[in-house]
Image (tube, rainbow, N blue to C red; front, side, top):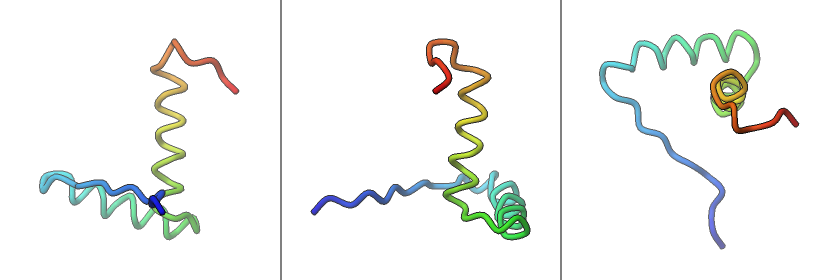
Length: 54
C-alpha cells in the first residue's frame, strides 16, 4: 500500500527558520504539516494567477 506521507529536507541555513515555524505551530496548536499547507495555500493564492480560488 503506498504511503501518503511526504518528506521535506531543510537546508542547514534554514534550520533557524524551521525552528521558528515549529515554535509558532506549537503556540497555535498546529501541526507542522498544517502550518506548511496553510503557508502554501496563502502563497499560491497570491502568486499563482493560473489557479482559481475554490
